[in-house]
Length: 183
Image (cartoon, rainbow, N blue to C red; front, top):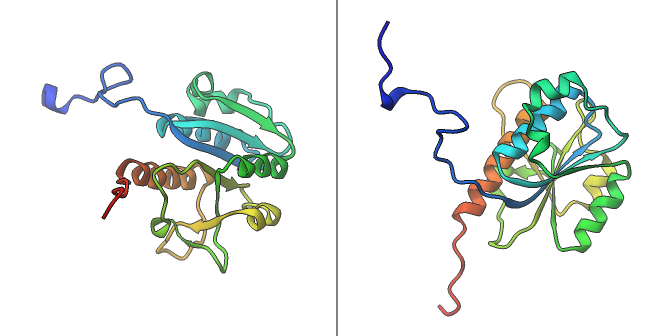
């Protein structure tokens, strides 16, 4: 069995060199109900420096399945449960958040084509496991994006999709260069 050298040793929470950063992103789950998915959304929100997580719809019990997948990230992520998701999103829209829903529709664009500005404050909405983002939320969204997929299936797990979306947003936010004041 080969010995691990420093160059190949896996880093952990205490030895990784990642810089902590919080992005102006609020992740909203629209009626996501499976405890494991909710736990994964917390873990993903933590990994991508999400400022706040809103669990939309009926209150969900955060039990054993949740804690198993969240790996205690609920202690470090600001969150709330909001039964009236649409009202909460309208409030955020009035605070100049850009409302972006992840859903495949006739009008959705690939998430990689979405343009963001330097100071974008984002509300990123992912939908429930069976029906996706509700029509009422899609109607008030500023953008509807989808993940390009190349197999025969047209959907993926909500937590995996949220991870891809958050990766795209944080990558864009990290690489946006401000326009010069004068050209």
